[in-house]
Length: 90
Image 1 (cartoon, rainbow, N blue to C red):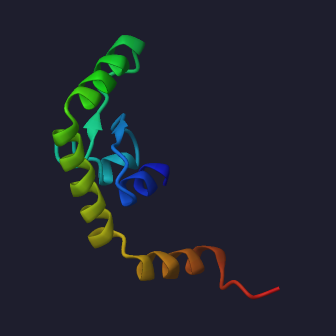
Image 2: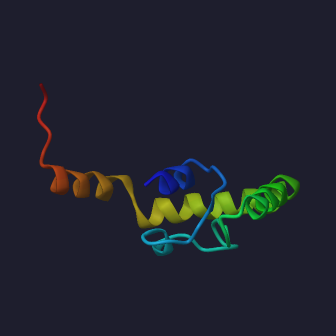
């Protein structure tokens, strides 16, 4: 959920493509996939993102658009109400 939230507000996403994330993370389209958990590889990917602000910005914009289309707020709220029950005011 944190990755989708980051995408929704335009924060560049660098993440491993693991269970659940593969549904929406597209390396080079809306995020940068971390190929390993090795510190030097993660650092290299962060360095690349910092050194290429235009490309990183394009990824962020595509991610934001994907979230808006795929997970519109009205459907998200309905899904949450279904899972957690309808909330009542205290």
